[in-house]
Image (cartoon, rainbow, N blue to C red; front, side):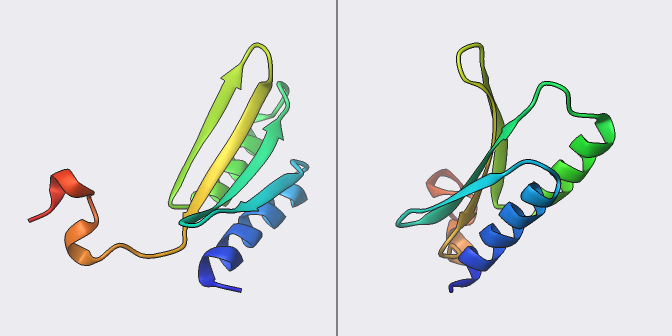
Length: 92
């Protein structure tokens, strides 16, 4: 399993251990982890959830009145070259 898959699996396992069953999906350039977040999550549990997703390259929370709240995390499969770290607008 590539390093990105190992990181994503570790994030998913940690979220599941915290009571947020996670889904992992593979894409060409990244691995995605998603978990539904209940409305009643304590501040201490939020802290632990944020510590878990802090190991991702990007993470966020999608909240809608129709679908509730979904926590997402993305782990990139390829590390960008040094000159491309900030994206095209930040290249030297």
